[in-house]
Image (cartoon, rainbow, N blue to C red; front, side, top):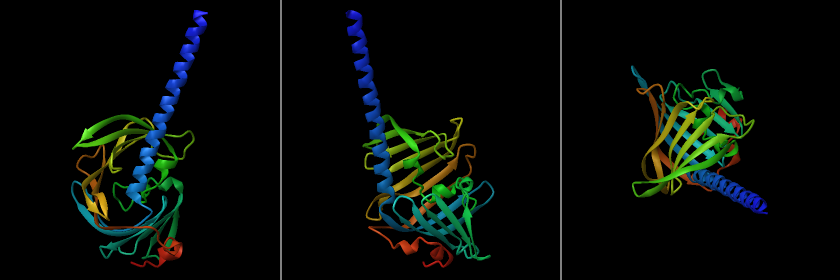
Length: 253
């Protein structure tokens, strides 16, 4: 009888622990979703400067971008003149690039989504603010801490089985007001590849927002890319016609 009671108690504890773990994962997923929604908004229009820094050179570009929903975006380079007009369109899981010098649109295969955009430390997916983090990963809250008087959540994100992703793990730092502070990217061997750090949090677009996004590879300390927001406006919606191949070929700034 005692053995049966112990077995029943053990089963009850296992169920409770399983439920707690499931609730923790659900809470972590809700935190990531809320932060993604906050950072991206329903729709947005922005102007950014991208600075690519290397040990022996650096260059900068000005980018005009529009986003709609969780996955659609279109952006163009407006300066310098030699790069002006180059555009990128992302709709759902598909991406196209336009080169005005040859007047040609190229559809990127999934294998190129993780490649560097215009020689920067940001990939095509990074710049498009892909919703893969929401769809393809399971999130677990590892710990919380207090930084500058605000609670910060430390979250580990592991890919779902058979998810079409590059990263073997991501680690996130999210502030209690939904602001992303850091996103670390790990390869399949769980080795750190690069880190995205959000800096200069200030009123922007009608809410607190990081005005600078710095991407740096783990094995290249002297090399990095910084995207700085010059203007940002959040909208309730934008015309679907903005996010088309026709719009990509015919930039309207």
